[in-house]
Length: 385
Image (tube, helix red, strand yellow):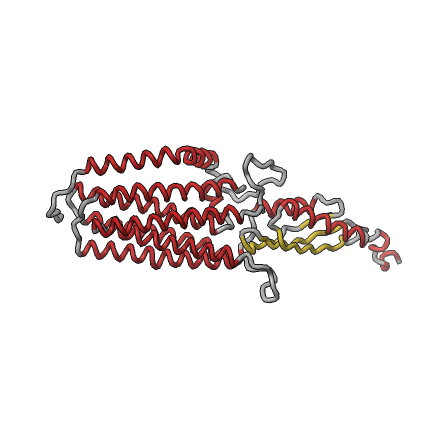
């Protein structure tokens, strides 16, 4: 253990200021935190089976139907996260320069990376709204998935890598911390901003209809502009906790190694979250099916049409957060006329678009059921002879 050459400043004063700021933050965000906590508690179902939600299930108050457009809310979540991360980065760099904390410098780098990531998500949201053309007949919705993958790679390579580098460097040549007061103040302010952004992303996830289990709902989300912000804010809050513990324990025990260890922990957190984002974004970029409730609802709509004898399982692919490709094969009743055939396809397509506005591409292949052969025709002529 290396003793600090300088006596640490009195922690009670710094702790009092941090507690006061945290209390103010808690009072400001209490209603939102209570709402999010209650919703997460009610949907924390231990059974996370991938079963479709019945099509006739009524929507809860305030919930959006599956397949609804969430573009405006997605922009709000990303804008809020961008503003919060930019303000936090400036304050963290100032605190790191004043105190020499490696953990605070890692957190500042993390906030800069998060700010750049949100800008890339906004770029992806903008470019994904371009209309279809000859080169991209299904539109540019998947471009958002590409940029979310780039965000995850940057978070892993730059955010996690720089934090690990700073931590290892500080462990090899530890630098005694200076006055930690500003570190505590900045951490409290950062917790307020990051917590607000985290609550907004969580409420947006809860507002969208999906499985009861929250983490399964998060996994099935098709909008990276929301789940990326959620994961990044979660990593930020965990990183702030690690930074606080490293700074506090380092001064309490007169051991500068805690600060470097906290920076390494922050790097590990960022790398872990980045791997999770890479997994989610790559699946959507390759071509992931739509939500099970949409698949089940489309199949139910087709099967309940009077002209349909049987309906196959729809083949779907997510073309973007608000765009779904649906391929459906149905078998019509025997004796269905051409007019009835056309009307049935039109009814099914209209019902699907009405219930699921995100169904932007629908292809229905209808075929007639084979008429049963008459008994006399089915008999072998040789037997009758």
